[in-house]
Length: 113
Image (cartoon, rainbow, N blue to C red; front, top):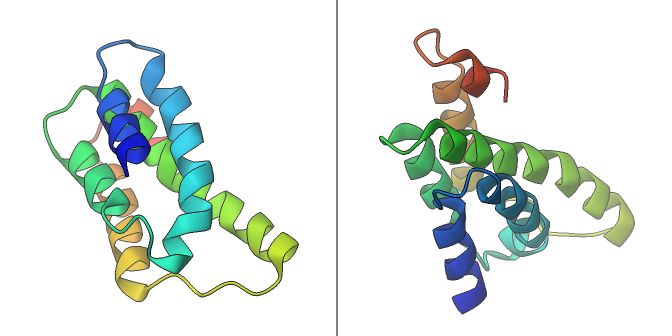
């Protein structure tokens, strides 16, 4: 609980390098916890980061986190064998956030993250 909360606070840091590294760490935890519904507010927080008025680096880090989760979850499923599927509402929110970020009006660094 407290560690994940601190990670999400750190992702919104004004330190220009910190959001990226937090995105990587958060994704590694999320890959294990999301299928078991252990970090149910993560995707909502990332979605808020992307769709609100936060700095572009925070938006990009949030999108990177979603991308890392999508990429890594396949690896973890192969390694572990059987895992619960992600809840469809989590998948829908992840995809909605990604689609929002690639809209033509978004800055290129965000669209390509």
